[in-house]
Image (tube, rainbow, N blue to C red; front, side, top):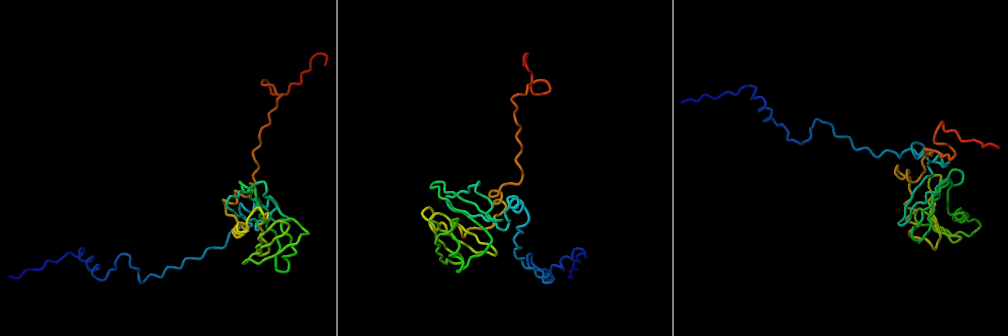
Length: 223
């Protein structure tokens, strides 16, 4: 007996044909699609002459590109020490809460080389003998009871110094190598805001609690 084949409707047959004709598995790349563009490299650092850092630094008289921050175990920023150094340099001091040792960060324009290193005093003490020792990309300098790491940058020098007997060399070195441009959160903690504090009303003790509030200038009989 001859069996007649059933004919599938065209609307049902079409998707089956497309599936059978080499449709690609999910997740396989489309060979006709262009290759994805490579991830772009990180953009340039934010312009130090713009933004919150710039406005706060300029209000202090400090060049924004000379503002740096660092950290060291046990040391806390002494907020009152933050200020201008020289013409437009930057200076800040961190204090050890247990020993009261001071760690000073100073950034100013200029350079330092093997020839000029011995001529530049350590810290603010002039007229003292300075010894210089190369340590990687930095200079380790001693003089007048203090020691310092000086890192030459483009057009300026970053210095971290302390009393020799108060802060070990390895702590000083780590703090110097950690010195970096502050991010937004560090800027907020490091530099004072340019917005003035709200004025506090002054209490007048001679103002009566009634009437128009004018001072009581009443003079008794006889003056």
